[in-house]
Length: 173
Image 1 (cartoon, rainbow, N blue to C red):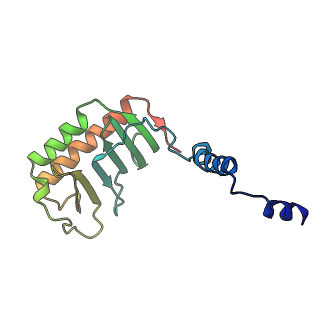
Image 2: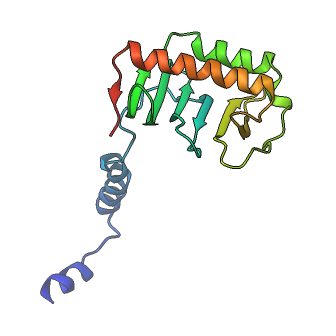
Image 3: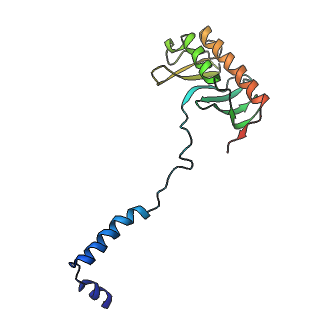
């Protein structure tokens, strides 16, 4: 009680004490610790292109691959792929942009978001960036999708398979 009584009796109206209190409250925010990102200089990666081949009634390869700006591929091999697990790879500087250009050349953006598939057929989800920056998603069967869709997915599967087979990736936990 004596401590509280002493504080309450303190005259805070003297100019020196007012100045000290003001300085204290001005310096206090500068001393605070802010929780920031791990690496503030790391570039922000944008998803440019993504493919995911899911399960089917037969023995189909299952994987997903996400191509990002900044020369990065995030790969997840699930079944019947040369590399299993989650991995990160560096890709050639122009690869993701060239693949994206090919998707636009094949006019895949004109396809509906979902196409019908046969019973038991493997579903493939393809996402890619449109010129306006938004992502377009197209889901179709591996055999019943339009020829341009099938051609593009086949090319992507070949690129991804070669990439993960030929180079050492970084394991993602």
